[in-house]
Length: 452
Image (cartoon, rainbow, N blue to C red; front, top):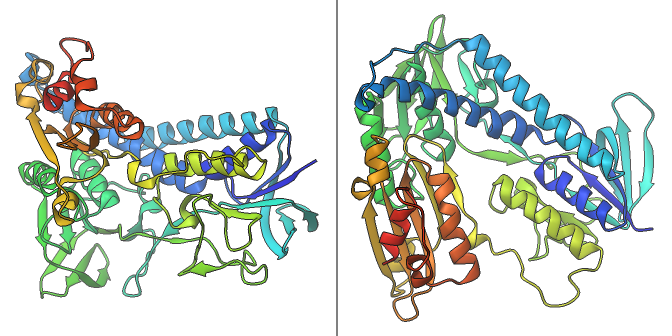
């Protein structure tokens, strides 16, 4: 029987384990923290739960526009903490139950490569053992990056994992980093009632995104009273008894009650025995090919450790593809993972989502594209919802009409992008969207309008 060993039980690891088990392998899964993945269950899921709470509070504040008496909601931080804990527990139980049902052996402990085909398992509550493996999957994830100038104490200077939720609601939060994680925290804490300052190292938030998309979000932040420090990089943090001072390289200083570091992550690759096993790495990430194989063909890496897109959806797909490849299902030509076609979303208010080729990237490379854009202010459902912010933008090939990409800013963008993601992956044309009989009134009608 094929011996399949997985180190790391996040979205990549547990998907690899369950798929391999269904395909008849003898599977051992080693996880040092929480089944389901600490980055997933203690970063992604709590942040979205907090965002949902903040969104509910914003909806109540906007209720006057729906013909209701406006209310002033108050946050119960303890109740929110219990809600997050309950969600995490239920999801962990669900994943653990599925693994047990598939016959996967789960070991709470750490795993380390001690040979090309050997993994040393050190359980939390027992003696170490060495197990043989025909296939090894490394899926140990990542952790928040802490720069040299900062000391995250969990009190005044926080990483993201200190803030789900924080011990107390910050009176004034200084967010360092304006990428996806940073802007989500700006949204949630401004919704909770905190004053927020965002330090933006470039001249727009979300520097990797479409400028039109970023502009909608910036406008919303400014309406909420968020203070934007554009073109500034944090270089030092001073902490006194009741606050912080974040000093920037342009001479400005942002003062607040707390500082939050949102400046990326680092891979959890230490102590895995990668060098001993001859696994090539690049700045801590395992170098992989299109099948997620490392420099050792029977050792795979997935999720954040692979250095590809740090998305749970991508990690899960990598895990499934790895198991199928290792157990012989992909010996014939098949569809490899195309990271350029992965949909992603930012759960701000308004939501932001995109997929495929971006307009700016197309023009930068000299590629001819057709770009069509429709504002939600023209949508009956958006007006009914009293939220006409944002737009739908579709990028297509002018010769064939094939959908190459798209961006959505607005209510439920994370759900609506699925239509464009399917179109991009399947090579559908704009006419395929136009000729679909969609529901009326619905926000999805704007997809057809933009495709027309």
